[in-house]
Structure formats: C-alpha cells, structure tokens
Image 1 (spheres, rainbow, N blue to C red):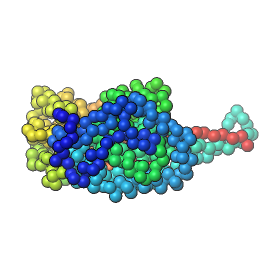
Image 2 (image 1 turned 30 degrees about the horizontal axis):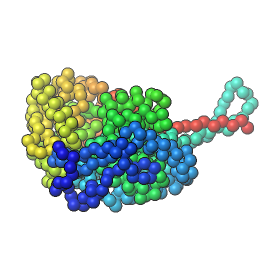
Image 3 (image 1 turned 60 degrees about the vertical axis):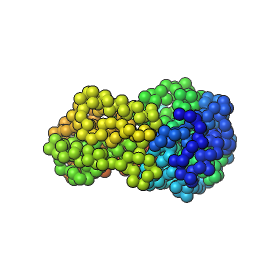
Image 4 (image 1 turned 180 degrees about the vertical axis):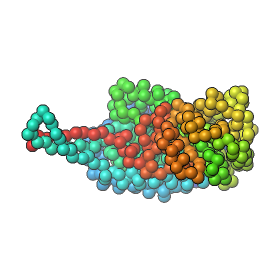
Length: 502
C-alpha cells in the first residue's frame, strides 16, 4: 500500500482539515516532529487505505517527554496548584470532549472502524463523563489520623496521620479498541491525583489521542503535564515502560505484552497496573428470559467487532435450551449488516488492522480443524477492508484453542452445561478472570454463581455495562489493579505515614 494520502474520498469532509495538517507529538506543551524525522501510516480499516501519517516517536522522544513530565511534576505549576484548580481544568477537558463529540466520534470510526453511532454514544460520551467524574475526586483525596498504642514506649503520646500523595511521572500505554475512552480511563485519575503523564497511544489508532491532546491544551492543562508520544510498542512503548525516571506505568492490552511490561518495569521497580486480556464466560440458565438472554449474548460478543477484553466469548447454555439459544444467537449473527462505520445501517464494522484480521482468521481455521462447527459465520468477507463474519461455533470443547485463548474478534464458542456445580467449574476453567455474565430469573442462584466466579466484573441479566463510578479490572492473568471508580485513584497515589511525638 502506498503511503500517499492523496486519495481520501472515503473520509468525511469534516475531518479533512484535521487529517491534512501534520500529525505531530505533544511534548512540553509543543507539537513537535519525532527527533528521527520518521513517520508512519495510519489506515482506515474499512477500506485498507492510508488516511494520515503520524510522527514515529522512539526512545529519544520518550526521553524528552519524560523530562518534561518530571519538570512539570517536580517544579511546574501543576505541583503548586490547589486540588480545586486541578478539578476545574479536568472538568473543562470533559466539556471540550462533549462539545467536539461529532468530530471525535468520526475520528474513532475512521481510525478504528466501529459504527459511528456506537463511537458517539459509548466511546465519546463515556470519555467525557470519565473526566467529569474524576474532576470531582480531585478535591476529595485525603489521609486519616491514627491513634497509636506503642507498647515499648509507655506513657508517650503521639500524633500520627497519613498523607495521600501522587506517585509522580506516569507512563500510560493504551490500546486500539477504544482509543479515546481508554485514554480517558488512564488520564482522568492520574490528573485528579496530581500526577504528570506520558501517554503512548496504539500505533493503529493514534488520531483521537492527538485531537484529545489539542483539547487538553485548550482546557489550560499546563505544559508538560500531559505529553503524547505516538509510535510503536516495540520502540516507544518499551522505552516508556523501562524508563528509570518514570515512577509508574499503566498498560491496557494483551496479557502477553503485559508480561513484557512487568519485565521492563523491573529496572527501577516502578509501580505497575495492568488491564489485560479475557476469555469471559457468559452463562444462560434455562429459567432465563430467553429472548433477552439471546440478544444479550449476541451483543456481548459482537459489540465493537468482538474487540473487547471482556467480551462474552465462552457461551455456556443449560442443556435443555442449548439448541434454541444457539439458533437465536446464530440468527442475529447471520442477519447483521457489515460495512463502513459511517453507513448508518452498519451493525458491525471491520477489525482494526490486517494483523488482527489474520489473527482472527487463523482462529477460525483452527476451530474448524479442531472439530468445532460454525452455526453462523466462520469465514472472512470478500471485500476491501478487514471484515470477518460474526461467528457462532458449536460442538466446542474445553481443550480447543477457540475456548482457551483470547481471539479478540466476533467469535463465540457455545457449550452446554447441566447444573450449578458443573458450570462453576467450567466458568473458572481459564487463565483469565476479567468478566462474566449470568442470565437467570432466580436471583439467589445468580448471586451464588457471582460469588463463585473468579472475575473482576459480573453482569447479571445484562452485559457490558460500564460507568465511571464502577471499578473494572481482572483476576488471575487479566491484570493488576482497577480502572474507574475511586479504586482507580489508588493506582496513582502513595501513602505517607507521619508520626509526631507530643
């Protein structure tokens, strides 16, 4: 594919001005080219056409960004601001996201491929809400006083208290499936606690992060507080994770890369939080509202082209209704309209990249080879772009790769179960533990299984419900720490104990 961007007839006219300007990096409040002068192509996954060229940052650019963040944290105006002042600026970012919602949604659709209505209603709206939610927390971070009883110092009195302090300079590496929203999940709590940031967006989807950087500058966030370095994970991302002047790294992505982040961070023992992969069980009991459960199961796996870490990719259905549910989900899959996210009739867009397209295609072939049968889909779509059919696989068994490994595409493996004891074992038979779904009219049964399932989030009679106040994160190899809610603040704080003898 030529790197020329001269032909962009598929690009909305509203975006032409943004895309035509040089796509630089934000370092210390300035938009700059990479030190090497390199650029890389960004593709529209619906057409396989180049839509922009972006500065390709590497280690030297990360060094400059970290230096800017360190100065802003140690001696810049950010460290001297009151919590109330920080709160107002963070709130302003949320307002600017909302006022530019149409443009941001178009950028996400163009860069990621998701339907425009989804990008605006979910990605952009939740991103704005995240900044507003965290703006409120900026003024509510506090320690506590502690009454001491020191047995080896009888008769002495002490005044003891704790301080909650920002961890310092934070490296944040975000994924390509929800580019703007994942940036908000990371930036919101870091800013609220008083940290400074170097953000590395995914190389597949850097455009909304660049536009967000412009809005952050417009909001009045001081120079050096938020730095954005575009580039590749192997170079810019690795340099950020291993940098000795970074106090913490926060990563969202695959479990395999998460393990590399841990090793990279070991040099200075920086703090690490990880939101990683999943292979989430979605359990439908025979007393569930079948129509609601079928629709929910389809949405759990086909939303965002299945490129969701918490996607309900293991579908367990009680044996008596197994055929009915599989047929229902398969009918939805068969009738889904695939196409460009800008087509208002599109229900599912393309996968994000050729690499992801090949990955999902490989799993489809492996599933068939291992003995699974496609009740719906099971193939790629013969058209331009990275389109894969929404797929329902039956006759799956626990040892198959399609059941054990994260596919990160619109592919669900459906399996029957008989009773509570069996499903609890099957649901937990995974190295992952990010999310789970339960569909039943028996609320006691739902709560019992929710307690048993080893997962960070359990949805009952719903799926993929996210809110800025609701913590999200994983058990087992699905990660460390939590995003969203007040729990996310702890990722960016450290506790200092102060003890005074009276």
